[in-house]
Amino acid sequence: MTTSSYQMDTKLLLFLLLLIPPVLSVVMTWGPWGSLSGCSKTCGFGTEERTRYVVVDGREDEEKKETQISQCYLTHCPVDGNWTLWSGWSVCTKNCGPVGVQKRVRLCSAPYPSYEGKDCTGPSSETKPCENEPCPKIPPDFDISVCKKENKSIFICKSETHCIPMTERCDKKLHCNDGSDELRCWLKSQSGKIPASLCTLLLLSAALFSLCL
Image (cartoon, rainbow, N blue to C red; front, side, top):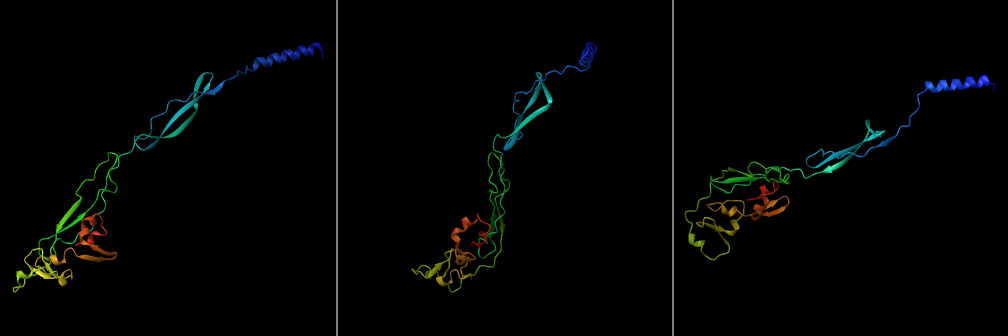
């Protein structure tokens, strides 16, 4: 290589170095995680998040970031109570006569109120009047002294003014002057026999309540 050629190459190299800006070394790294945001829900399960940014030469680049999302839980949400369906109407409280009452009930259990939720509003029971056939009259030749004899085959009516043979008790016909001979009988149902003494418990079951007398 001649001296003139070397000088020309050196000048060309210097010229190119002047045209091309120097490449600076850029330092990029992740910054620290920010604080957690508040939970997205005031009760029950929600989410919270935190963010960190890329730091370029000591400055955060807000366009380059990473976000972590996690589940959070503060407290139980209040659960308001709600009524069950109404039970069926009970049979009339009187087997005969014009004055009687039928009743139906419902429970605040669908669901029960919890965690400071509101209770159910409205009545838990309803009643309505019911009418029946007239009660049998005491036979004119009836002798009350018959009822006072110690005889297990006699049923004393609730009014204590009339009695009937025990064979007429719970025969699905009214004989007592107050209809009490057909109260507290065993009832035949699809699932067997249910005693009327369980009627109070059956108030809690719409399916079985109608079996009570």
